[in-house]
Image (cartoon, rainbow, N blue to C red):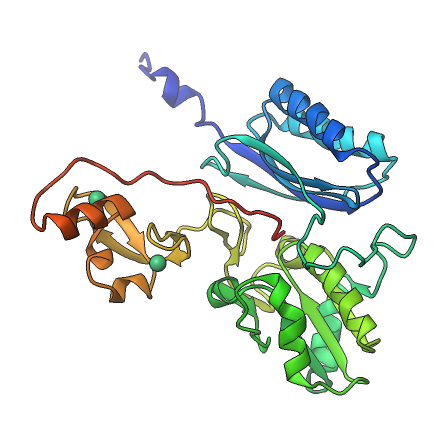
Length: 327
Ligand SMILES: [Zn+2]
Ligand SMILES: [Zn+2]
């Protein structure tokens, strides 16, 4: 019997290879490096966001060709003479990025402090714990440590380590003030973590500057932890700054969350737009707000409030998140 498979049945639908990595290394001319990267990204079909600065680079990049993504990583390795990139990789059937964007900034992760210098030799070795070491401490010293999630409140909300403190911050630059207010004893053992590790690299320097020497960070962040230890101490999903919104315990794109069209936070509540009948997901906050709660987009919300009960055309467009320099 002949099989009548169409082309799309034969070819598995395209998938996207994703790699997240950063490195603190002196870049003399980030602007010319940016042009070089834009050129290479175009050639290799790389999409994603890269933040560049004199202090290094920080990116989540994706490509439909695994081979080309490897070439992209090699470019950084050979350029800066790196043995490894400490990249955190994952897969997605959904495009995490729609385009490539490179931005030059004073810092590759924003602290508002450009005097925190990570380009020195201690870089990447400052009180790092591997996922195994991390779990050991969590198991053996649980009652003696203070575990702090350095991420923003909406990241904490959808998944974190059990027992982690929530700083309730809106952005990472607010972390030092939160810490100041906590008035933790200087000798206390403190464990901090973030998505991929970069926020903690600087966070740890700031805490050391305040006189806290007993601070440790999770090497490679939650992404590395989940890769090595799914379904263990980390509970829930890990927020990521791209179209996937979050990744689950197996680093697959979230099946639970989509971006709330009104505020950009993760939303899990399924709704249908009263104006254009488009399905969308809304967050817990916006679902409390009149007009927003029933509309799929800012556009529909506007039209519905001006002309209630008048139907209109499809408005919702999945928008690309701007991860700025959060990770
Ligand atoms: Zn919302
Ligand atoms: Zn709508």
